[in-house]
Image 1 (cartoon, helix red, strand yellow):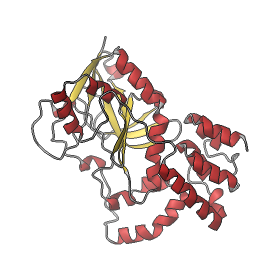
Image 2: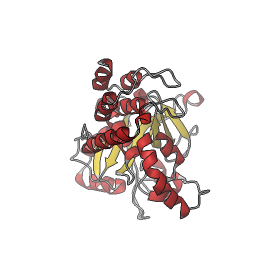
Image 3: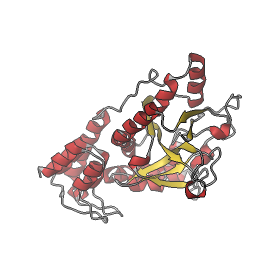
Image 4: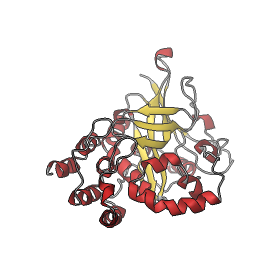
Length: 325
């Protein structure tokens, strides 16, 4: 039976001591400490934006760039005080409660990605944290190495692969380090957390750990995270559909009325608005696009149609929407 570690974040900007060692922590925050200007000029994020938001941001970007050093590159790892000690929890590799929590996290990943993707359409971001937890070991180099579960930030998901950046250095492992780019499949993750407008969503294994703690330990644990968790053992999913999705649907309908070319525009990956919103699970936007005449048979560079993206993300309701066309 392999011993496993769950490393949890300390998101507080304080150097107060902790009874846990810092290198035993897997930190998670994605955008909490990034300035609004830095977030707007992140070209990777702009490439992921729906076209209507790109148009809306042109004027804003002009103002932002006038007051920023355009050569400056944002480094997410520089946004955190890595000298702060943070907590770690341990569990057996065959812990049934943890295994069930991880299964539920994988099963509900689509709701995580839908909530996170809504931020691609916001000028002022609402998502403070968007992260997934992944198990690591040293593999063939050391098959008996401890498994360490660490959190990835700066995420992207293309329907097949989740890409992210490893937040912290592991405790004992030698094959990975903080700042490494990691690619995993959805069936490899063990948890996810999204904090949007102050609400904590997900955290399946985290809630198992919190439920097993005494009150004092749990308070210390929660202080390290800096989050207002639901009651121990309780996991909350993002609202589906989100109220913001309805706002986006009305905005998209108006934009399409002014510029029908948005329906057929394809990004560098050959994806249209219909491809992207099918992947994001945004059924209200898919409905608007279909009514406006979007072509569901268009294929991206990968050869996928919008139905393929919906099916990959397990949005069966959107698969049915598109099949009706």
